[in-house]
Length: 124
Image (cartoon, rainbow, N blue to C red; front, top):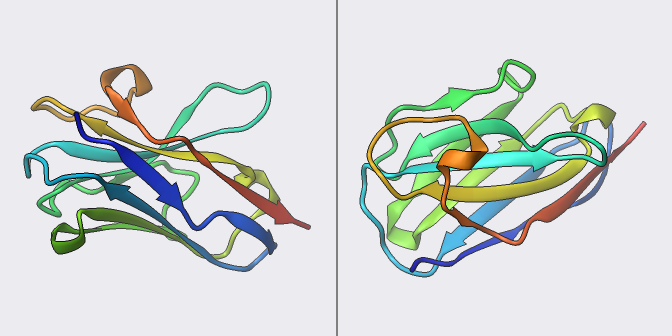
C-alpha cells in the first residue's frame, strides 16, 4: 500500500504563491490518477486538480484554472501543486490522493489512498 505525504502549506498573503508537494512512498502504476483536493470548515471536500503519474490527462476545478498548476515528477515519486495568485477563498486543508484503479474521476469517493493534509491559509 502506497503512503502519501504532503508538504508545503503555510500562511501567505492574497496574491502570493505556494507550492505543495505530495511524495509517494513507492512507485505506482503510471495510469493511476493523482488528485489534489481541499476542504474548508463546514464544506465538502472538493476536487482541485488531477493528473496521471505519466503526466497526461490534466484537469482543474474552474475556481483554480489559470492560477494553479499540477505536475508530476516520476523520478521523485512526487506530485506538485503550484498555486499562484492565491485568494482568501483558497484557504483550506489540502489533500493529495491516489485513485488506485484505471479510469478518471473527480469524486473524492473514487480515491482510495490519502495523505494527512496540509493547511493553506491566505490572508486578505
